[in-house]
Amino acid sequence: QVQLVESGGALVQPGGSLRLSCAASGFTFSRYIMYWYRQAPKKARELVATISSTSASTNYADSVKGRFTISRDNHKNTVYLQMNGLKPEDTATYYCSAVNAWGRGTQVTVSS
Image 1 (cartoon, one colour):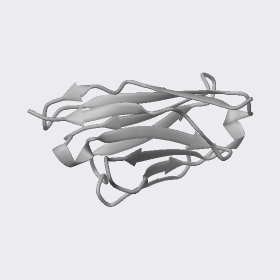
Image 2 (spheres, one colour):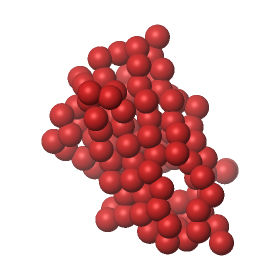
Image 3 (tube, helix red, strand yellow):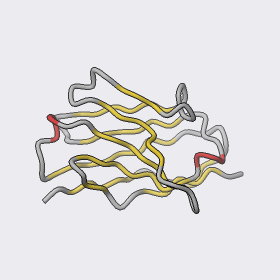
Image 4 (cartoon, rainbow, N blue to C red):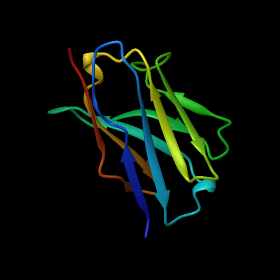
């Protein structure tokens, strides 16, 4: 079955960086668009970034443009989210998604 396992979340100070990873299995990873979402407490889930199957196209929420970079390695069945210039408002649980499946998420907390 489809499995998505996120990792890399942590507590980081404002202005810091993190790299999230999402390891995928159970489907032909290289054929699918991959998504990163996030959900902060008491807020709706927000689409953060998407990447096409070949990495030719990426899209970002306005709130993260210029700070976050999505990438993927189709040989490793893994999608990444490089997050720079982190702000307290980036605090959330981050999820990857594909083929209507979700991982369990990884917590990112930005605080001094």
